[in-house]
Length: 343
Image (tube, rainbow, N blue to C red; front, side, top):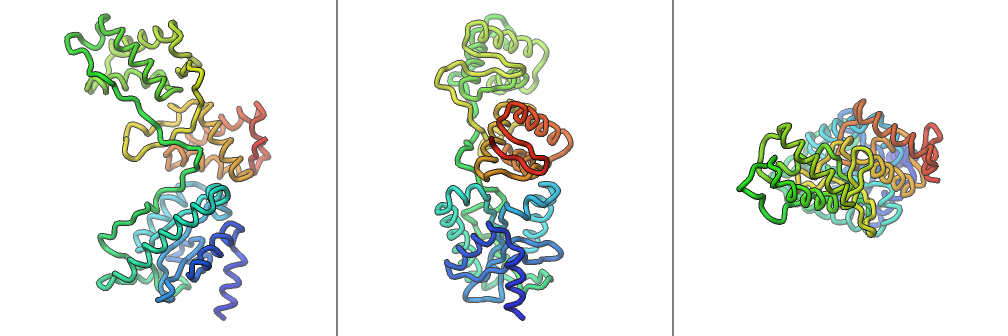
C-alpha cells in the first residue's frame, strides 16, 4: 500500500521535482511528493532518517506546480503563510538556478536539511503539530531557532544584482536653502552621481532622493523645480541622457543590469513604474533564457517577484504585459500565447 502511494506521488512529480527528490535521497533522506497539509499541498516533503514519521522540511520547486498557480499571492503569500503558521519549514528551489548552478543549489539544500534535522533533534521541549491530510506527523516547530537560510526568499538568479543606492559623499550646504540658485551646482553634481550609480533613474524620484540627502521631510514645488533645473543642466552638459521619464548614464562602460531590492536598504525597493522598460525587458529575457522558455503567466509573476513585488495586481500585470508586447514586437521574445521563449 505504501509502495503504491509512493509510486502515485512520483507520477505527479515534474522533471524538476524528480531531480530534486533524487538528490535528496542521495543525501540519505526519504522524500514524499505532493504532501498535503490542511488542504494545502507542497511539492516535496522530507523525512528525518532517525524519525521517519516526521517531516523535517517542505521543498517547493518553482516548476509545474508554480506555473499552474493563478497568482503569486495564492502560492507565495497565502499558502506559505498557512503552512508556516502550522509549523512547517519551507525551502524553495528556483528551476533556472537548479539547471545552471546545480552544485551550489544542492549544497544550499544540504545545509537547509542539516539545520532542519538538528532542530528536530534539539526539540526536546517542542511539539509536533498534526496537520491532517494523508501524511504521518508534521514538521517540528522549534522556538527561537535561528535559521541560516530564509525560506521565505526565492532563489536569486546569478545575473541579478542587489540594487545599489546613491549616498551623498559630502553633506549639503547649510548656508543656503534647497531651492536657492546658489545650490544648483551641488544639485547638478548630485544628480550626475545618482544617475551614474542608479541609472536608468526615474526623473520623478530625483527630488525625493535629493531631499532625503538634505534630511528634508517634505518636497514642495520649489524643490521639485530646483531638481528639474539640476536634471536639465546635466543633460545639456552630456553627463546624463534622457529617454522618456528616465535619465541614463553616458559612460561608455555602462551596462544595463537587473537590480533587485536589498533587504538591508529600504530605499532600494522600487515601484514598477520607477523601473525602466529596458530593465524589465532584460529581466524577462534572462528568465526565459534560463529556463528555455516559461509559461506566460509564470513569466509575469516571476518578473514581479524578482523586483520585490509580491502581489500581481491589475496595474502591475498591465505594465509587465505592456513590456512583454513591446519586446515581442522587437523580436527579443516569442510570445506563443500560453508560453514565452527567447529568440
